Image 1 (cartoon, rainbow, N blue to C red):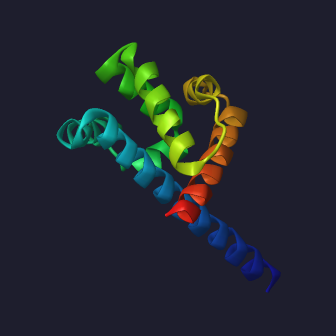
Image 2: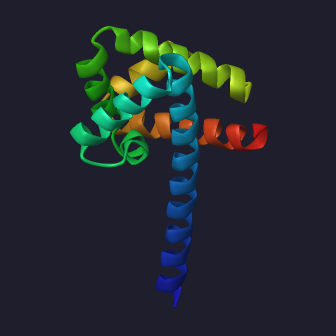
Length: 133
């Protein structure tokens, strides 16, 4: 019985994180389109989906470094500029004070603690985005 209770809680947490990851991705997509134009943004997402071999939102949540590395293949050093623009948009839409350099450093890191910090920031962004919508 206790095992079922634990499984239910873990499942609820997964659903919550999956929902927040999806909200974060929607905002990311919106800001990408705003930055690059919808056609170019769709092309970038298609390239990412193809190279990541999974949903971009899921990849952002599970392995942000891999997403960063794929963006680097597409944009080169322009990746940092693009992420700065997206973080600026997040700050405007969500009314949050997020340091874009810290965000980039967390995305570049393979360290699990960095991934967890980035997820925590993405949760905060998603919750704020939901409230703003």
